[in-house]
Length: 578
Length: 43
Image: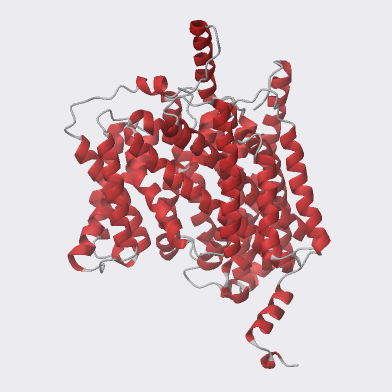
């Protein structure tokens, strides 16, 4: 039978059969059972005799360097990291993997000084939204909380989808089976001990991931022909792809990702949770090591995309997510494929368990603790909320992943929300004039105008385009100013920000309108900063930052103290909840 | 770019990853030892 006589589905099936090596069903099941079985056994090592609601969310606030750094790296790397980095390498050539991995890594570095400030002001915090509640009030807190609830649900769904895709491509198991196994596997070891289980298993998962990367990258490189292949196939790269300083790569990949990932680093509860859990004097070393570890693993795997470009590989169905599985299938022996399988399962599981822990903490602290229980929560009921949240979130993740919904709009929306809150959040912990109204209004304005630019609700031309380009220039100044402020004093940061705006304006006007992704992200930063500053400038009330530590305290300790007080007064133990 | 440099550019990342892994394992062993000395839990 000739290939031409087959219908499209048959041709696609045959193409996939030749492009992907398939593990047997038994091997795939054994790998998954071994992986989740071992992580479950690890979680059993955590002491459960004295249940503690604070430990469930942030451990003992004194996690050591090894566990913290490993957990930061494992959480920051999700399944999409490999695929996106490889796609970047395949599309943009030499500089492609750097424009994904390097900027992602750098943001871990840039947020740690801010993290230290948050931690110093509220050492007993569980979520960043909780600290916002103490600083501003409910609306600011809920903006943070809701954005994280949405963001973590989306992240769960993406990771479960990646599990389904991996299993269906590299084994005879179905997509749904992969999604279900990943969902149940992650929930099984995270449910009881929460964040503590997440941190402990992150270490083992990261070790597996790094070992796999150390073996896979050189193996594929040498099996593909090594240095001789590179010399012979230079012709497969366009002039832009062979330029290490490609403008196209910077404008289409590096700059938008750089701006987006800063928002992710500040806004995401999975990072904040680790910040509040690590021993305070180890924050710097933890974040520095995480920067290097994340960069090395993600850039290294992005090199597989660049190698795919060199060897002239064409992704099956034109789907860039097939690049790494195809490279693995073509150039790795069966044990290498098994390692690759574990690499992806490890990356998606470590992020998924962090998302479950983040979701449960937000529901426990920000929804139940601060709003439903009005600051006097019952620890037992709080734990119930946390575990119920994990079960419901897993169900939502599994169902949505199974339906294969297009979530791009939601993803863009959450990204916009996080981009809009970066400046107001940071400035709220340094400038005592910022008000709740300024915070909330600036975020709403920034998200609204982001949507106009991102989805081109108004045509990006004439005065409208100039308006957005001017605010995007301010956004550029805000981003660079914030990055400077992380390591230098306020005057230098303001100088850098103003200089950046002055340089950006003549270059951005008439130019940025052709890059709506970058334009909208930068506009979000610019608008939120301008509105927040303008509304706070004349405020005569000053906030006392010392209040944050008084307002943000341990839930378990508070409840125990309440119980003791009640016993002293009444001679009988009264419920902790008012 | 020279092919040798490009080869180094590709293979340097697994080397750095290995160094980071080593650092993390050593740190974990120290943390384990400290925890057992002080009879406390690591997390």
